[in-house]
Image (tube, rainbow, N blue to C red; front, side, top):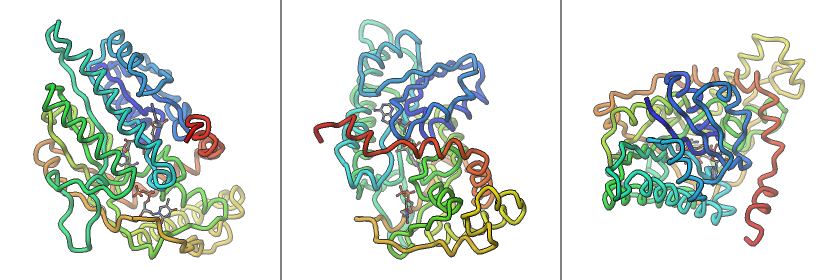
Length: 368
Ligand code: NAD
Ligand code: TYD
């Protein structure tokens, strides 16, 4: 039985992880810590609040005293660290917030873990610090380059990626220097339920439903490796169970697509779902699919993102060999589930989109 602290549990992957974990480990204690930024929503883990082992704490990972008291009072033995500022475009506009949360915040968690778990006065407690990271720390690839492996040098290109790379280094240093039992997973692009509609896939879905355009950056030929979020949760579970302390594991979806191809598949999926359910045309009359027109007609090319990474691809052989881990959801099944989830959860996405990011930043960082 584990006693976990899950940071960022009200965000996209964190909330999926809470559902995943409590569904499979109902006797575990799971303390969810989240600052509830614009990207974090209580509704995303609402079902979990009914479960015996679950507790939500509204707080900040940068609050060292709070984290130390949670680890101590709750006798937690595992941290799964998702909390972060996570959107590349926002990091280009406001890098300072990303450095503060992703680097300083991760360091505070490491300090807390070291203080409680490696107390020199007691014998070291059994523990694990799992840091959830991204393939973006490795930079980007040309069309014929070999995928990123765990030994690919870090070459982050956006402030987001640079802040995650710095956090990865700190986690590694705490293992090497203090003996903290850490593991890092570097995963490719996720999609699925509860993803804030600022990232490509949910943005496309909610825009199409509202009759708005799909903004494609540049030529639309940038390549990402897509993974259904539940598969990522399974990869983290495997890493917790079988991963070696101090080791890094790449997790990939085995699903490289350029943005135009991905968007084309998503549009077709939405068109098929509308064709099979006439009520949807009544609910979403502005959608192209409501009038029987292809959703792909909503594609609109816009200016490119500065420093836009061209291609990500992940060599996940270490996770396959050492953890026995492979993702299982193929893209068409994952996109279909995702489209259905957004159709069934309109109050969720309308609610989260009501929070203004700019207001939130002004409130948190009045001087920046
Ligand atoms: P998200 O933006 O949806 O959620 C982040 C969560 O962290 C939110 O609930 C937010 O309220 C919380 N948070 C932010 N600052 C906090 C603070 N100071 N203290 C406590 N909580 C705070 O992000 P996500 O997409 O779920 O990503 C989760 C993690 O996974 C991130 O570390 C990200 O780098 C990593 N990751 C994401 C992807 C992806 O495709 N989304 C892929 C690989 C890795
Ligand atoms: P995103 O979901 O922001 O993830 P990341 O930048 O972390 O990979 O973007 C995925 C890809 O989609 C990326 O190449 C940028 C592109 N994109 C668009 O073309 N239009 C958009 O409106 C967004 C949000 C992303």
